[in-house]
Amino acid sequence: MTTRTTAHGLQVATELHRFIEDKVLPASGVASDVFWKGFDAIVSDLAPKNIALLAERDRLQTELDTWHKKNPGPIADMPAYRAFLEKIGYLLPQPKGAKATTANVDSELALQAGPQLVVPILNARYALNAANARWGSLYDALYGTDAISEAGGAEKGKGYNPVRGAKVIEFARNVLDQAAPLANGSHKNATGYSVKDGKLVVALQSSSTGLADPDSDNGRRLAGRRSVRPGGPGTPGRRPAAGPDRLAATGRMATGVRRTGRTGAARPDAGRGVPAAVGGPSAG
Image (cartoon, rainbow, N blue to C red; front, side):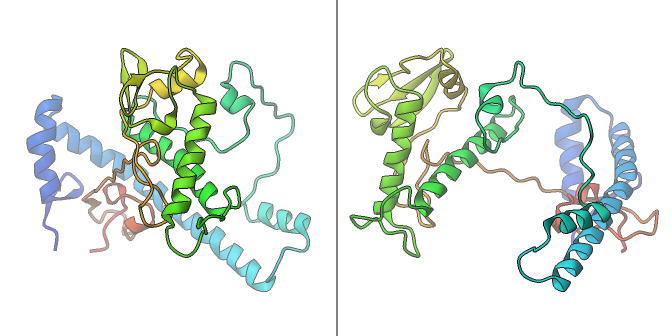
C-alpha cells in the first residue's frame, strides 16, 4: 500500500512528496507552504469540474448505447440520427453566419487537406512524437494497403514481413527525395540526420550532404528536427525500425496525489484518463 504524507488538503504519495520537497522546490525558489497551498486550491477547483465532465461523458455514452441497441445495423435515417445526437447534446446545432479564412496560414493547413497534429514548438519530445505519428501513419498506410504490391514475397500476411517492410522504407525514402531532395545523393543512402548551424546535415555511407534547397518550407521543417538515425526493416508488428523510418520517443507522466475527503464524492478512476494528481476526493 502506498504511504502518503498530508500536505494541506492533499494526501501525497510520500515518495513524490520527498521528491518535490528535496529536489524540485529548492531550485524553484517557491516556498513549500506556498506550493502545496496553491496546488490544493487548484485541485479543489478542478476536481469537481472533472467529476462533472466524466459524469456527462457517461450519460452521453449510455444514451448512445441505448439508441444503437434499439437500432442495430447501419443507420438508415441519418437526418433523424443527427437530430437525436443534437437532442442529447452530443452535437450542437450548426452556428449561423460562421466564417473561416485562410489568410496568413501555412499551406500545410490552408491548402493541403489531412489530419493535423498540434504540439508545443518548444517541447522537443512532443514535436518528435508528432513526427513519429505522421511517419508511422504513412508506414502503416503503405504496409496495410495495396499501395505497395505483394509481388516478390511482399505479402502482408499475419506477421511482419521484412520484404514488405523494405519496400515500405524504399517508398518512404522516395517521398523524401521528392519533397526534400538532397544536394548530393539520395535519402535512400542516408545513415543519419543532424542539424548544424540551423541547417540539416545528412550523413551518407561515405560522405555527408545537405538539402538542395535548405531555405524551402520543407527544408526549414526538416532542419527543425532533432538528430535521428535511419533504421531498416525487421521490427515485428509491421513497423520498420528507428530513424526517419521510425523516430523513437515516448514519455509518460506518473502521479501520486489524491484529495482527502472533503466533499464526500468518490475519487474518479485515474485509468479513465484522469491523472491521480488532479483526482477527486478519496473514498477511503
